[in-house]
Length: 195
Image (cartoon, rainbow, N blue to C red; front, side, top):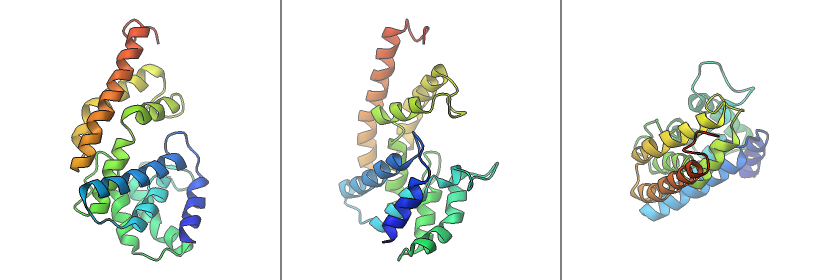
């Protein structure tokens, strides 16, 4: 029952890059990474974190100048109580606080695989699709050239943010996908000059 409640809460915030589909992918990939690493990870904490981790970026929860991960973590105990979550809210909060590629997730297996899964969702074909989906909608990507610059930066920087060996392996493949897309686009646009 609590999973349905958190899924319904998450569904109230559709977004082309940070909405329910992103959350479902991150949850699934976090479980896969834990399995590949041979780590026992709390699937309930991962599911709850997947539903809640980006909600601090959306109105009415967003606070100007506040980190969205910290904001979501701060609101998590109330959301979990409303959903009758049976686990420890602090475990979910820790996963949420460490989810961004630039964050230190600490040493808990759940936090590491979630951090890596969220980072991997910025990479490869899915990362390209997410970034292009927000062109003109987000200050990261006001136009296509800025979106491509962001993709190029992600291809350079995100592989180094991955922690688990399983994520690093997937990161190689996804980085190659991103670079192949950018190269193909460059071939069709005179070196990205006519976007």
